[in-house]
Image (cartoon, rainbow, N blue to C red; front, side, top):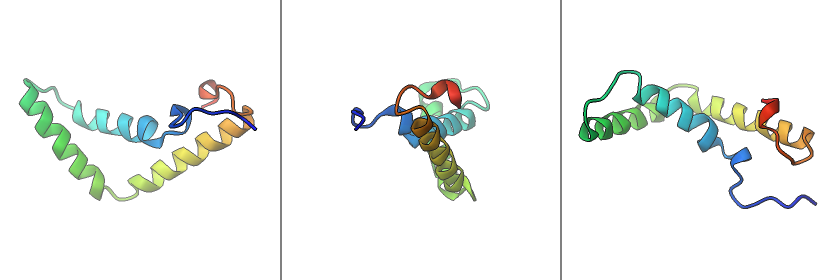
Length: 81
């Protein structure tokens, strides 16, 4: 049995795929102030909810990470992605 901490980032699809996607959408154009940034994040989150195929890509990314983690014997696997 492999001891893994709860919420291990190696298998956190929100951390690796959605956060990267959201960041790329939010910062596609520069923002001038905090309020504009908040609005951009809100708009981007709403866009993510209706983007066709996005959650399928999240699932695929998660499955790829699971397989790599298994192949690495539960150890560090980031270098294999």
